[in-house]
Each structure stands twice: as structure tokens, then as C-alpha cells.
Length: 114
Length: 111
Image (cartoon, rainbow over all chains, first blue to last red; front, top):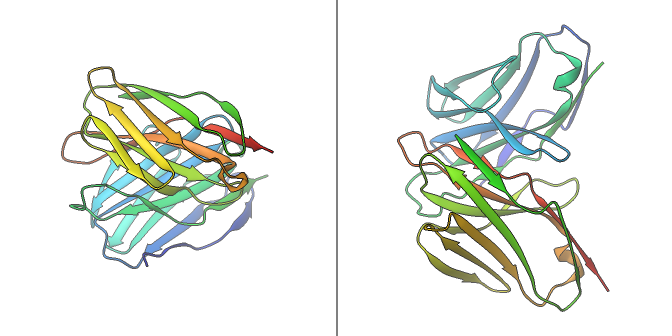
């Protein structure tokens, strides 16, 4: 079974802190994604990566950066956390060439910025 | 960019059939997926339509009409455990394979 893990289920940080959210997948998937999920807004794409050291902005990249130094690991960085970044953060990965383009999601990190 | 529209809430009776619609506007389209998410859980993949027509997987079916920029998820023989949020998602054409999700439909199944 594909497994996508995220470093924390719950995280509380203070305004202005630098925050790292880690995501690891164990199935050699090429593409990885970071979403945030807020009530009524669905899943919004922050960044995605299609290869090591390669990244593309999603729909809401402002205030975030990402890092992908190894194929299995994709990190989301909040440079200076703000209260409007309080949200559920979901990581996902995909193996290309399967036809269905099924995304596998991690359990999520609920981040609270105070 | 992409935009997807789906109803925010649907209520249906146990044992019945329910259809959740999704319309999309896109600059480049490859396919439409559906995901289920229970409260407190992660989204899980249900189906994918790359071509027009109906795809069936057990009690769930998904339909796509590219010419109408429209798709739907059909759930048959509803069970209480089907109460969840359902998201459609568009896979963009092009090299980077970006995926955009709709805002989700919360399905409540009642006895």
C-alpha cells in the first residue's frame, strides 16, 4: 500500500515563527502536492513538485515556499507564520503513467497560528 | 486557470440514489476525478474519467461530458457510511499535471 506520512497531526505556532511541514511518500511517486483545506473553500493548491528540486506555484503560493531535495520528501515552509495561515494542510503524491492519476493523501496537519 | 462548481450540500435517504454534479471552466483539460472525504479524514480517490461516458465502480459511477464541461458522481443504494464530502477535481493538460479541486459537496444520508 502507498503510504504518505506527514510530520505532525497537530501543530501550534506563534505569529512570525518559521514553520516546516514535512511530507514523505514511500512509493517512488514523481509528483507531490501541498494543499490547504478551509471550510467552504475545498482544497486549494499551494505548490506542487514534478521532480527533485523542481517546483511550480499553485493557486495560493503567497507566504509559502517548498523544498524537494529527495524524491520521497516534500516540505512546505511558512516563512513567517500569520494567523490567516491557520488551516488544515494536506500533502499528496501521484505516480505518473497509471491512467487514473490517483492522488494519495497524507493524514493532514492541522496548524494553528496564534 | 480552472474553476469548478458543485453543490455545497445534498441530503438523501438511505437506499436511494443521489447524483452530485460538477461543472468546470478550464484553459486545458485532461480528466475529471472524484474524491471522498469523511470528517477528520484524508480525501480518498473514487474514480477518474479521461474520456466521455460513464465509469462504474461498484455502487459508484462517474460520468463526463467534455463538450458540456460537466461531470457527475452517482451513488446508488446509499448507505449511512456514504455520509461524507465529495470533491471533483480537474487534471490540467500540459507538462506539469496540475490538479484543481472543487469546493466539495457535503452529502448527508438520512434513515
